[in-house]
Length: 520
Image 1 (cartoon, rainbow, N blue to C red):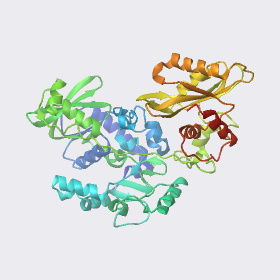
Image 2: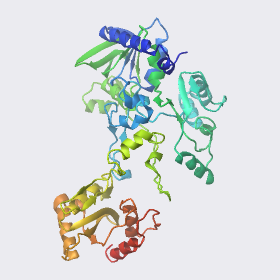
Image 3: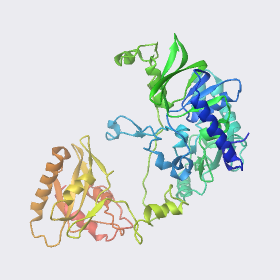
Image 4: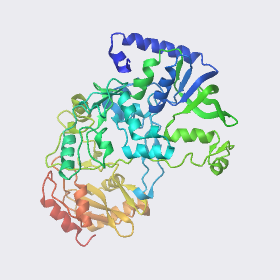
């Protein structure tokens, strides 16, 4: 088998790419009224299904994708994956605000491009746990869904480029996989930390680890020599020069056409018109966890009450459609090292020297760009503001401390300020502002604090619950100039805290504690 990556790196790669381009242009310009199979969605699963069907030269296959071509740097260059999130290649779904996570709305990025999620995500290869596969087999009453059967499939499709492990890993298949190349030094350190507290560690996450109660391992990656290996590129692209496979991009499937209870084709929004294309054998919906139930419901298949409330004629009452969505949870931990690490240790910058220089050093030669917001006023004072993602929850209202700091900094007597949320028995959190006054200000600090409280109330309204401003002589900072808001918050909340290793002057924390006495 010749994979896409092998073709792309061969001397005739240009010839093959040109054959694909010419073939697909001709096929798209002469769309048939009917195909044997219509596969909706060219993501991870749709790419595999379309390829397997198209291996039979006697059948015609139409693969429909709402997004566009994947041949863009953000997709093809593995290190540029963050540039896909929030772009035109991301559907940009967001969950409903959840009261259990302080009313936040979690983003759910899903691919809108050839390759779907496998073209915009982080390229991790994760198989799933034995218990899950065996549960699927029990629920389906079909042992083909069980772990042992699925493990054989994984071994068959893999082209594993790590240490030999024939009991769990395969070689020679279409799916190139390798251990994370040159991982950040933080990765093995994290494994050592896990091992030190009794968490088992493994050579890779897709073998023995998927049979036990848990563990830790460095991810397997779907990238080769810095280039992404999407499922579309591994499966579909190598056969796109065939006359029996049409890949139609920028085409949105809106509904499944039915005759009685049989799917007969699909409706597609394409280039400003609606096409109805028939399917002789099957319609395959592989549109992802959001769009697949959406298309089914638009086709009259779903919960009868919900369909009728939306004015959709009911074809099949199937109440499970659109329910029970589950997603994996990602929890981020933030740690502080005793010695500051250079930005090049970030996972997206490790071994990416030029990208690191571009992001942090080139714009202002001789300086390190932190990307903190700020400005310089007419008196020459430099204000370093809080980051805009510093959000506090005041009785269910999500408020930006950065926005409040802008208001405090607008007062003519304020040289520097910081706003943070402190504990409150009724509201959960309330904002507290710390002020450093400009040199030469002789007015009463108490009067200035009252003016600050009134200013915030005037700009944001009573919902901000801003009632406390405290004047201090200076704010605790790191040697690089960042205000230690987290440490101030712990002191204000009466929580245990440790002396930050990078603090400029430790004595300032005693001054903050003294200023808070009797105020909180």
